Length: 440
Image 1 (tube, helix red, strand yellow):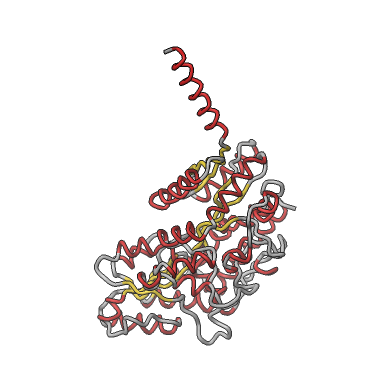
Image 2 (cartoon, rainbow, N blue to C red):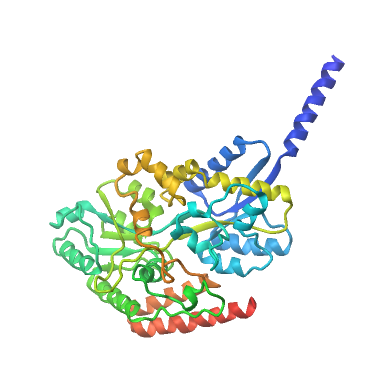
């Protein structure tokens, strides 16, 4: 009996040693609800697929909260190995010299397979340096697309299979819908002043919003989003709002924009491709159609390509070699066609590799879910240019708040569109100079 107990104790000790032999890789993220559940499921599958590493996902609040917490943790030498950072934090992360372990360098140092050319250029371009080196690993990338109410279109006498392609068509379709009393509003936008109404709008028309390749070229960049086309668009938003064609949903993501589409108050909505699941769940009484973002058809070269939003995974310095081996193995796992196709299909986020897109096609996902490839076709419509590969500005969260204030000043009539955009540039540039001074 004693031998049995000793043998059992020895076995338990060995099991314990085996468990402790696993290297833990901490991962701070900002996904709650269904997305958080899916993220944890993917992580659990990775942990079960091998015995060397355990990735521990930890929810750290919103993107902003997590980024602030990460900076504080780094100063206290308590930083995680991996952290999920939203796209507007890219400039801040790049400026954190000595804190970041670039992904391309991590993969080279650990010797794991890594082919940058296998990733969609429109996705990785946002997170690469000017030499094309990937600094962080895309994870949840999305791009804005047009959603429209086919049922309302049909009631208004419009072709339900034909979404508007230009802003002129958005205006004329909206007027027809309102006159037919099929809906009281034409279109609502999420991120009306920022991601959709300025950043993607400018990229879609191949217009810059900043010097030095929209900030990719260095900290001395300056905003220049007060061009004739941007002024024209904000003037149109003001006019369309006054006429009921456009309904403003509020600052930042526009909390009232999507609900106005769900309620069939507005017949069209431009929002993240990752909103697809939520929209389909809420569209219980009407059929949803999908389309590209509209463009002004008198602008040469438009439409160009849309740009992404979402977040990437950054690797932080200050950990040992085993943890970095684990981080590289996990990033390699996340990039596999099977994991990416599953994540893409479950969430509406973009597949970050061509292989994941091809696998989704082979699995019949796009055929079974019409419109689900709209985001990919729009994002890859043309090779990205200096104006459409993304943007990189420090303290961009603060700058976006300025854009929101100035669009609201335009919509309220307190300022003309031109004055508001001039002020957005002036105030935003001061924020950029403060960031430059702090990171020289």
